[in-house]
Image 1 (spheres, rainbow, N blue to C red):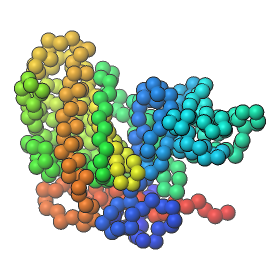
Image 2 (image 1 turned 30 degrees about the horizontal axis):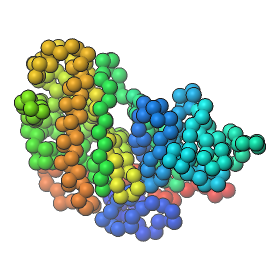
Image 3 (image 1 turned 180 degrees about the vertical axis):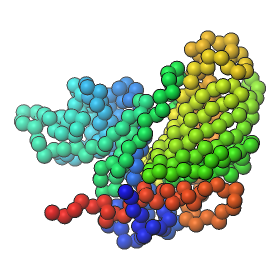
Image 4 (image 1 turned 45 degrees about the vertical axis):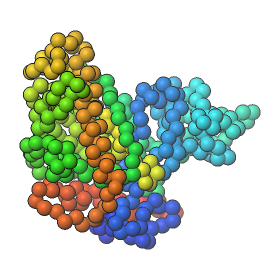
Length: 366
């Protein structure tokens, strides 16, 4: 489905790139915008703000929702005369349509111009819109080289019944690349050295099927809970990496009997910076196997939200340790590995599919 340039390791980039393709040519760098699905935000935020604008994949985009609940992610440039469509420029949503602040052209969530003041809609005025996908209220948009449509879909989250807490979301912006952040899913050695985890195990070999990579691992850790004391945890995890912008991890903490879900979502901002969002949920704790700072005495409805905040705080602490390294490191296309480094090169080979040959992405000539 995907072909890489001459089967190169990502980072060994040809200099013969067509104009307009976002790609660094330094042999020790990675193209900044791999194909895939990338996080935009939550439906809750879009509904609350009505119109959201942000930097995403080297573009300024706007996001809104129509009255039928359809989400639109579009480049923030009016197809009429180029006005910015964001709220800072005066863009607004009226009746589910995006209204340009310059001449009042109105656009629906397909990007089509549906009304203009005093004239018929301009049929040729079409916004550049991106395919969207929503998972549990998290919104993603597809980025394809040369604008080609999605080549695969994100998987649905396993149901596993109800009783899950709301989201805790932490986002960190730093100089980095989504391939480097997602590599942590197979870089078992850093878990003990950087984060101090104990008994780190790689339970099964990494499995790959198309754009999906699965890694299973376990560890123990001893963490401080505010000023209350320390808590030892025994965790097993299944990480599903689907493209370089989406990782979904299911955690089981065995000593408490706690289930948690974690999304690790890396989104390029401008070709240098990325936003790394950590999204967590914890399942309702009906009968904790052991008491944690009075958790068993709390009303049941409070337990999962409180533990979810704890989980989110722990994860962002780990991410901050990684960011210190990620933001200063250089991509080494052929690392000198040891047996303790896990399946890094298998992961690198998996990543090659997200850097397709530009010639394979161009529309056929008529």
